[in-house]
Image 1 (cartoon, rainbow, N blue to C red):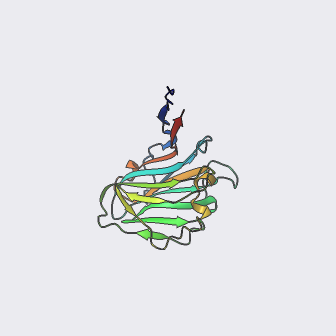
Image 2 (cartoon, helix red, strand yellow):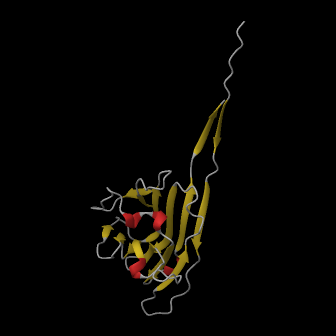
Image 3 (cartoon, rainbow, N blue to C red):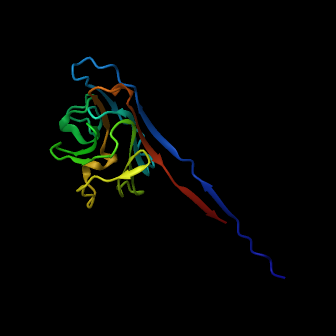
Length: 197
């Protein structure tokens, strides 16, 4: 009699670990235009096994306020502040429109939602390959996906590569609960493992 051949299949979901940076609530503005900013260094271990970068930004929008996050490299010199010349890109809300501004800050991609008031959440997600190369970028306004017209992603632009960033800067301007902005940058380690014995 033949011995039965036994296969043991085990599926283990890898814990979805993440390196997360929560930007502290911004202080009350002290300038006439109500502008206030906060710089933060990205965590040193953020790229360890990173498979997805996710920005989550929640705030109360109005037709006249501005809430934005700039990403870049603090290196001219490394002083803990992200200057305009160190900025790779800025993404955010400006007077009723989502915008994305590439390095150099001369071009702007804009998307205008149908409703411009109320609490909003922007999610920007960039999955990367095991070698760290970005594969795509997705923008969401709440649960709805949107695209910036004329944004060229092939080849994938260097200014939109999260592995090159070391610092971010959150800026809010205007009236309408600008200090209620909540910003979170997450470097996710996604995946699943299948073992066959």
